[in-house]
Image (cartoon, rainbow, N blue to C red; front, side, top):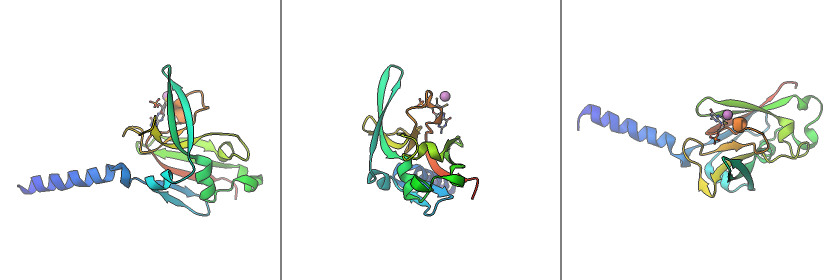
Length: 162
Ligand SMILES: Nc1nc2c(c(=O)[nH]1)N[C@H]1C(S)=C(S)[C@@H](COP(=O)(O)O)O[C@H]1N2
Ligand SMILES: [Mo]
């Protein structure tokens, strides 16, 4: 094998490793007491929520974990702590392709707004396809899918007033 072929094979192996969904991590960080780096197994072993989305006259069922649950676990100021200055806090969701959207912390806190915004890892019982997964936000009560971030990598809590 030529040096180039060896180098190409090594690069291919490195690339397939970095895109292996089982090696992916989801970071929950920013202004939280306990930043999290979650594996696919961590998400699977968390309390699970199912939501159904109507798309092109078809019902799609996504399953995953409430974003509110992840924020609680990370020690974001939710529940009784979400008052006063803490209400000026947002959550920036970022994806592998650079796509970013914002939710207010309050709209994700079940103590304030009943919501079922989840980080999904399955669709109709199957792992998400590569152009959606391994995780996507599903904000099923938004009228359009624009905040349902595919290929989610990071949830950053940004508190504007300390
Ligand atoms: N990472 C990422 N997520 C994204 C987008 C994007 O460009 N990149 N587009 C959004 C928009 S505008 C829509 S309408 C939905 C489309 O998702 P769907 O093809 O599963 O309906 O994905 C949303 N999530
Ligand atoms: Mo869209």
